[in-house]
Amino acid sequence: MEGFPILTVVTFFPIVGAVILLFIDKENHPALRTVALMFSLGEFILSLPLFFLFENSTHQMQFQEVLPW
Image 1 (tube, rainbow, N blue to C red):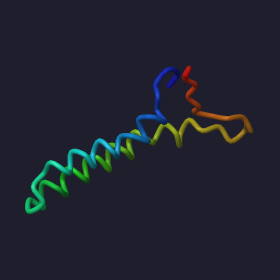
Image 2 (cartoon, rainbow, N blue to C red; image 1 turned 180 degrees about the horizontal axis):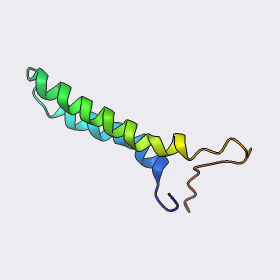
Image 3 (cartoon, one colour; image 1 turned 180 degrees about the vertical axis):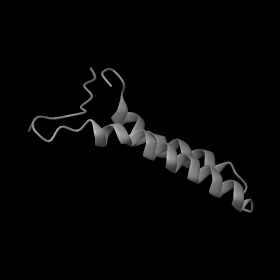
């Protein structure tokens, strides 16, 4: 996962889903539920590497993103 901004994607992916939900008619319940479920499942799948690649044997920071300001 070196070079892939996993923390940024996991943080902002739900916001993208929420913005898309804003544009769906509130009376269209099946579409709202489907889109919400797809973004929830996508968020879960995107977060799996954080769980499986976490190393318990170290006290150092993991999954950090360093960007120049």
